[in-house]
Image 1: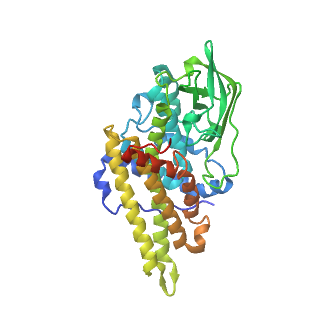
Image 2 (image 1 turned 120 degrees about the horizontal axis):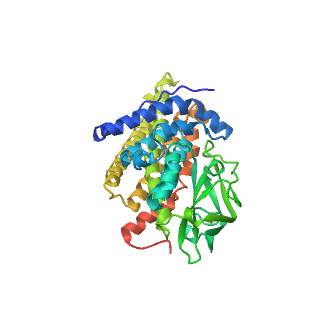
Image 3 (image 1 turned 180 degrees about the vertical axis):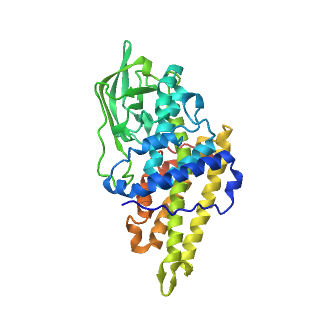
Length: 393
């Protein structure tokens, strides 16, 4: 059943005044697209546990794939704040939609741009930007999640090819991807990036079923059994773990913005419901405890907006550190999850139904709390940054 989008934006501290005309145009365009294309159908796709693949063309048209990569490769050529705002508006629709764009732009296109050859850039980036190709990113393994350096996926030299063996797990878009950027250890133990294409012998991508979260996202594995990868498909400009970690920083930055959209959607729905739902002879928004919830929600959203905006200004001049990105990702995701839970309470029993977005966002955000670095891992990254001691070893 199609649903009408009643969302109103929320900007308690007039943060729009800090944004450029380009930022506002990007936001309004993506917000309108989400209202027309995502909101009416997303509950049904989440219910069916099906990815709305038909949205890929629209995501490309609104510039959601690699918006801050150079225009010469068919990308947006926008700044990092524009990229963040686009992710915010997409996640307001659903975390699965933002994940699809985030993976394509930050985890597939970015490493090809940053670490690839000019030939690789020109071959893949325009097709990924236009949505002609869908990509995925293979780092996490069945036994190595928070510790990617322990990966066992490996390549062995075989003349003009490498022989790839191993497996990756929890890979967004893998079952439908045309290309995969995969990270593996070479015979010297160095981490290398490879571009795999669908159809390579020994390369499969089975789908993962049974998810209660990110149900409108397509998630799977990557399995490599003696896959022959031409050496021309190896990313030439990276030979260590800093390669995939820099991609994750780019994606985490987008998440720090994106989850604000989910939080705003939950707050917006809860605020409206509190003004319309009558109990004890008056709207529930007139009761102190409901007002407490709503006041705390908009306060936390505002703090997260300011954190993301400042992070964006630092990113625009190349000064955003990975530790600063970790802080924003951790803070903003937990903020959004707590708001989703409180918003669900304001909706009462109706909050668990798909007539309202809170429960769907809440389930999605449980995954966002874990992927791209868990809540606890990001806490320890901040701890290491402020103390100088590494708690991972």
